[in-house]
Amino acid sequence: MTDTARPGQLRTVISADQIQKRVREMGRQISDDYRGQSIHLLALLENGFIFMADLVRAFLMSDLRARGAASVKLATLLDRQSARRVQLQPDYFGFLVDDAFLVGYGLGSPEQTNRNLPYIGAAS
Image (cartoon, rainbow, N blue to C red; front, side):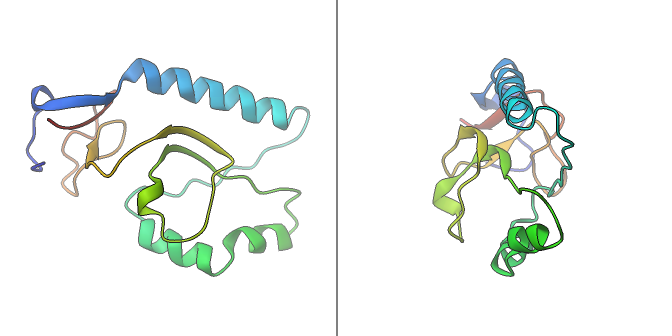
């Protein structure tokens, strides 16, 4: 896919409705699991996969537990298992995806093309 693909040139991989539905489901599941407890969240931005892999290899989750976290859980909207560089399984995930270059819902090229789409798409 080129960085200049227009929304009309994309096939929808995950629709905006599917994303919102799954995010709500994950939110309910996490809320149920932590009912009555405080939750602290840490967001790792996309395109930081090398940095994140290095952090995980330095036992980031163990470090958070050592700092007093009662529990540490991983939540991700997209799970691309084939690209995983470390043995790691998210506790909560929205969708399994393949190796296609995805855009929309915050994802996109370095030039931020198509990041503002309400759905996730890939080149046709």
